Image: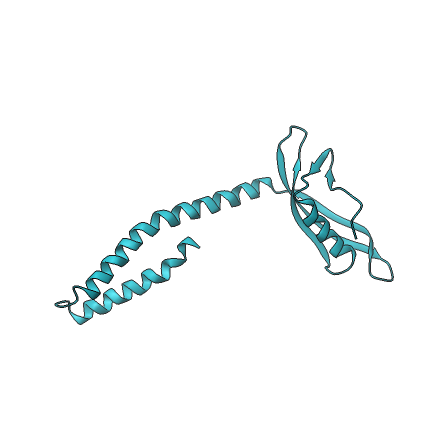
Length: 144
């Protein structure tokens, strides 16, 4: 079932790319498959810029089949939060890239010590190098 509406906020209109996802969330709520419709989408403003909105709605006054014939909800401008989230992603990607190179070098050096140059290294030092190598491997999540 197609929802006979376009999501508008004042004189702002949402982008067609987001509408199918928003309409699906609304329809699921209307049909009673979910208790709420929660969606994020972009709207074009009067100055032709795009803003991110978050819509949370719930179906009220349901008929005998459980279909809502009235939706109430709240829409919030989350553009600033979206911007902060993108900055966080960029920061994590940059830090991950910058850490990966030295960590790879350190891991290679430890492997060289443990494998090719292990003669003459005391057992206690080998244990410590093995522990350091395990810790380095556990840091492999940085890029994910």
